[in-house]
Length: 557
Image (cartoon, rainbow, N blue to C red; front, top):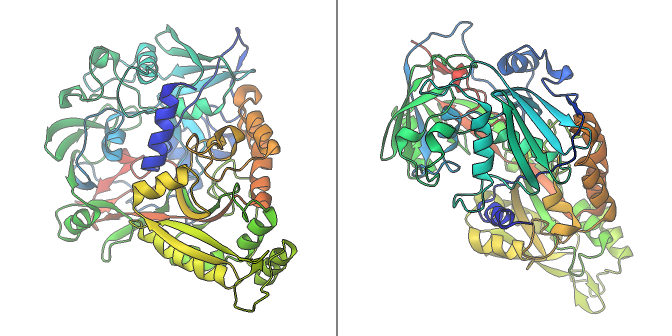
C-alpha cells in the first residue's frame, strides 16, 4: 500500500469521510460494456438524461430516497438565490464545499439519486475488460469548459495523473492503489489500466471531479486563484470575496442550462448561523440536521450509519454468543425513531442497488439475549442484576463522541437496554478526535461509531482481515472471517465488473455480518434541505448528495 492510501485512511477516520479509491491493470483485454453500463435497464432508457431517468422512478420516494420540493410544470427562467453554507471555504481543489464543487465541476459518471447505481456523466459510456483490469471511458461530444475550450480525454488523463501523484500535497481525493497507466488514445477516449482487478475503481474514479489541463497543469492544486476555478458544471464562478461567492448560470451546460440565472453562496461560521440566515430571509437554502420550522423541508437519509461496535478481540466480546446476545438485547426501532433516522439491517442503505434486501439482524428479544448469555456462562449468581462469570461481573466500557449529540443520546439509550439483560456498560465520553483515535486503535469494548458508507458495495476497509490491525485500517472491530475476505475479493474481480454479478458476489458478506455481529447497525441519520417558499426543484439524495441537480432548481417570480 502506498503512502497516499495511508493518508487517505487517516483522513477517513479523523474526518469520518470515506474518500477512498483503489484500482487495478492487465494484458491487452477484451472490453465489454457492463450490464448497467450506459444506463441500467431496470432504471430507464440509456438515451434519456439522468434527470429524465430519475423522474421515471421518483413517484413514491421512501425515507431514504430523494424527496423533491414541488416544481411547477414549466419553471420560470431567471431569478436569483442565496445558498447558506457552513465553514470558511477553501480553494484547495479537492476540498471545495460540496455546493461549490457540484456547481463548477462534473465527473465522468453520475450517481443515480434513487439507488446509487452508476450513470453516464461526462462519459457517455464505459467499457470494462473481462479481467476487470482495464476501464475505457468514452466522453460525450460537445462539452466545453466555462472558458469555451473543449473538454478532451487529455483533461481526464491529466486529472487522474495529478490526483494520483503522491507528491501533490492536497487532501487525498482518492487512493489509486495499483493504477499502472492512464492514456488518451484520441480526444474522446480514456483508457485506465491496473495491475490487479478492483471493480470499486470504476465508482471511485468515475466520481472524481474532472479538471482542465490547459489551466491547471502548472498550478499548485492546494491553493488556486479563484479565476482558475473553471469547470464544465452548471454554474460559472464570478466573484470570490472572503466567504461570499457569486455565480451565474452556464447557458451551454451539457445537461441543460440552469433555470436560476444568478447564484450566491455565503458561508456562515456554524449551522445555527446558517439556519438563522434562512429564518431571517438572508438566505433561501440551508442544509440542516434538524428541519427548520416554517421552511420548506426536503429530507433525505445521509449515506452513513450509526452502529454499536464490538471489539471482537477483547473478552467477553470475542465470544460470538455474547455479541449475538447484546444484539438481541437492543430494541433498535425506537433508537432509530428517536434519532429521526432510517433503520438499518446492514452497512448499506435499504435502497442501495447492491443491497440484497433479505438481510436481518437479530430481532429484539430480551429472553433470547439472556439465554445466549447463559449459554456463554454468564449468570446472576449474587442476584444484583449484573451477570457474573468466574467471579467477575459483566462490565464493559461504552465509548461515545461527546460533541455529537446523536451519538451521546444513542449511547445512553443503548446503555439502559443492555442493563436490562444484566450487562453493565460504563459510559465513557471523549471529544471527536480522542474518541475516533481510541476507536481507530481498538482501545474500547463497545463504541457508538458513525461512518460514511462508500458509494461502491466494496467495503473491504470495514470488514477484511487485512484491515483489522489496530491503527492500520478501518476494520475497527478487529473482525476476521475468511468467507467474508473471499466474498469481497470475488466482488472486486467480477468479469466486466457486471453489477448484478457483483451484487450476488457480495451477498455472503452482509449475511455473515448479521450472523457474526461485529457491529449492530442502528440507523442512517437524516439531513434536510430547508428552503424559502419560493424555491422549487430540490431533490436531496443519500447517494448523489444535496446539490446534484442544481440545473433543475428554480424560483417563483
